[in-house]
Image (tube, rainbow, N blue to C red; front, top):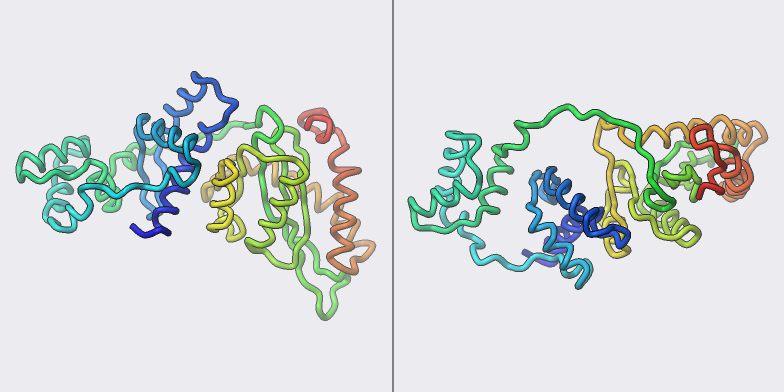
Length: 315
């Protein structure tokens, strides 16, 4: 496993344990979270899905507290290459799972050892079976029901999104570009933490906005984003891991957590963009100055319909 692969594994392990790594948690709260984490499947860097035991999650948490991201990088395993050297073992493992779908990876490893005298770690078998689509969890999947969620305190969860804005300059003419508004909102207070128009929609814009938001409002515990290119990149994953921020991507076709952002986007279009385009826009700098003033004096100071408080006061 090369350095890049080791870092990908370390970032994945951080994504798994991040919500249980907060210093705010009591031992009982952390234990409950670890049980929840162990009960669900997690998408690995290779695209497969797997579950981790409570012992594994606790071990990663101890490693994170002792040495940060570097301590989450994997060590070489003693049985590396065993399955490649004996491909017939994998075929037999698949047959054993198909024969009895409830048979665990540990049971399959034990059967293989007693039949052939070759020890294969159960994690290796589990990973191979998942890549072959023979994992048990997929058979138990149930439709998910979504309820209303609100963070309990400021900076517990930030939500980010990109809103397609007007052509700039406006009215449109030769040289006009389509502006993209990158937004970060605090879930608890509904505070518009920061927002800025860019002429491009990429990781650099996300980087610039997140740096500004952290400078002005501190570190969030969770950064909740969609799966677009500005938010699905190595830079953002590593930055969040180093800063101790849990990066969460919304699932495709999943509405959970996006309703507040969509309502804010609609409010921005109706209350700000409609007026800005009516009066005309000469440049991105002018548009950003107007938006910053509107956000500070209007959006963050009006009484929010759901909370009954002004976002800046609730924050």
